[in-house]
Length: 547
Image 1: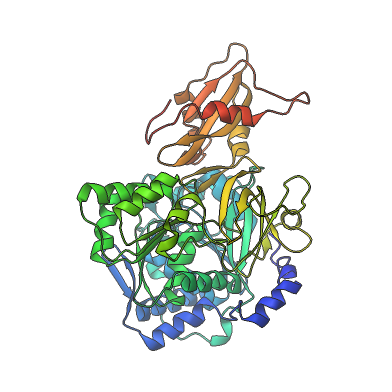
Image 2: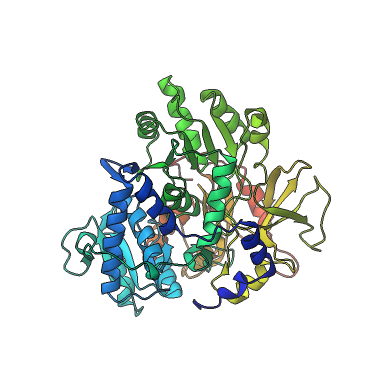
């Protein structure tokens, strides 16, 4: 990643307008964190399991970690990666980056060798914070394997780990001492490097500054009328854009309490919402569906919860209506955004719009939206389907690679989302499809090509195509169509074992395998994926079911 190329877009003509209008606040996360320490030092800011940390405690921890990273030789502008569950230490690492003038690179914990190796090399991370183990993954061993393959790996810092002898432990990092103010990040500095998979299979590095991220938080707090007494529940990974913004950043920006959950369990989530008097949450479709079931089964409604925003995967209208019935008085809404433009819509903020919240993806706020013909690029009329283009102060600065950035914008600086939809006269977006073939599984973007490329390496596979198929819990899941070589054999179990040996993340494994004699193609030989998707829709998988 070219660490300096991203600066080019910050000086665009629209960027100056954001500064002049105040849409860019000209502050950093550290600025807001310091203000919280001065105003309410003993206020509990983060709850995670048995851990309850105040603003003063988080600030002291961040000071210690910042000092330790400086002792290790990190320079302003360096990248810090972290592949952590929803633990309070991730809040500290993110704040320390702001104090030290570093960028952060969150990596979702389910990623393994192939994804992590590429990301670390591409962003040139100097250090990575990981658990020693979490669930069934040993992260230290994974990073050692990556380094053994020739990659110049970053320094490994284990969080909640034992004495491995090969890493630096988080609790031993640094020492308490005051830090000079001049070392902190500036508002236009690169703050976030977050990777999202594209249809080409190669992850794209999405770059955000402090200004763009805080513009997102400002819009959300205004639209949802967030006050300091609110409590935000975050079961979504803090290494996704939503979890990152609303756990690691909003806690300081809005001065609210954030409740983290590192292992999703609907019944436990309901208990947390009740015990911590949670008022707000934003999570993917499966979380809403399972929490709704838990509420229905318990016969009790958490009285504090006033809003549940959901997105990242297709949200059936009936689920929104069902959740609204189970949670009376709580606004249930679909929102629309991406890592590049976190919340183009913020759902609804009025009970009068609850019906529309079920059938649209929310009202545009803090963004300009342009709907264009996906072929010609010409603007289409209101209500007519087109590709969704967006421009706003929360939009990313650019991608890590210049070629990808140039392709991503039109001449006026509108970001091409690749999504299709309609826009109503009063500003509600309804997403109708995607130009490309990304599979959105439980809010996670999966690239078919990445899976196809691995299948094509199998000695028995002649051709392979991976498409989205419906899934009752995750929204979508991969379905693989393969043409085998003469005499070749492959079952679903064999395919999964093969992909596991290739160290592909398990959520990318196809949950259905269809062996065919030939794939449908155009005259020029291009595979007709829409035909395969139509066939895949004939069967809907339930959670845990393999076909």
